[in-house]
Length: 142
Image: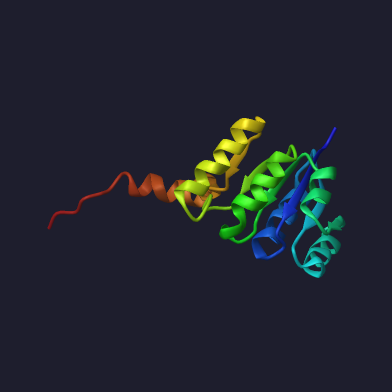
């Protein structure tokens, strides 16, 4: 059984999430949502999936979703998707305020949903190598 992934937001980050889901074995890119349906349709067509015109439509056919909308909308979009039963991978930052971040965490806990914030650079091999070098400075005396 494949996980059915959706993407909320079809800007550059949303397009990248759609691309990644389309490449992962065991995952089906099931749908793309954007407030601008034409943008969602363009991304959906590029990656061979469906564009939907509502968060409800996204939630009906997906198990999980990436939220790649402007930060100001993270609480509304991410909260709605979790309330509708989806696990959420959210672009950083989690929210524009600590209060909204706490509200998102509360929704995730109340609904027993996974809320993951996309701090992916820590897993980037280039960044890991750079970190290893920076954490072991070499001193030169003259």
